[in-house]
Length: 96
Image 1 (tube, rainbow, N blue to C red):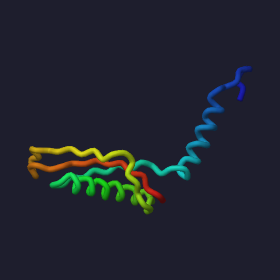
Image 2: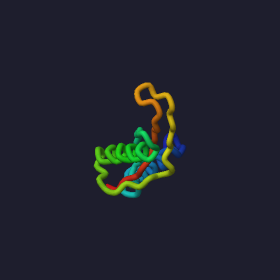
Image 3: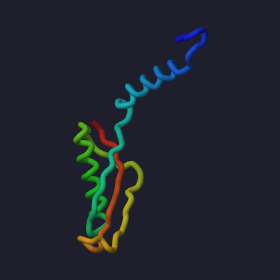
Image 4: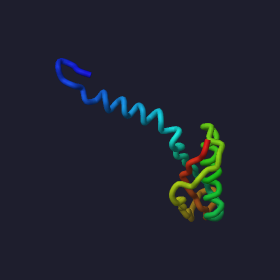
């Protein structure tokens, strides 16, 4: 596009970004985050995986979920309700 004899550089970039935005859902699924807690680290991670999978299903991704990165595990010694517990956070990608 031209405006007052000068080409606007932004229009080409905008069109390219729009094409990438439209094509991206077919290429990769979004990243879903989940959180959980438990008396053991394993229980906390499992709860976080279940939470992330539920989030993915609410967006229409009912296929298998794959862990993206390492789970983050936090040990808490003074929780006001449960005392000594573990909290976990995971990121997953899921198939439609």
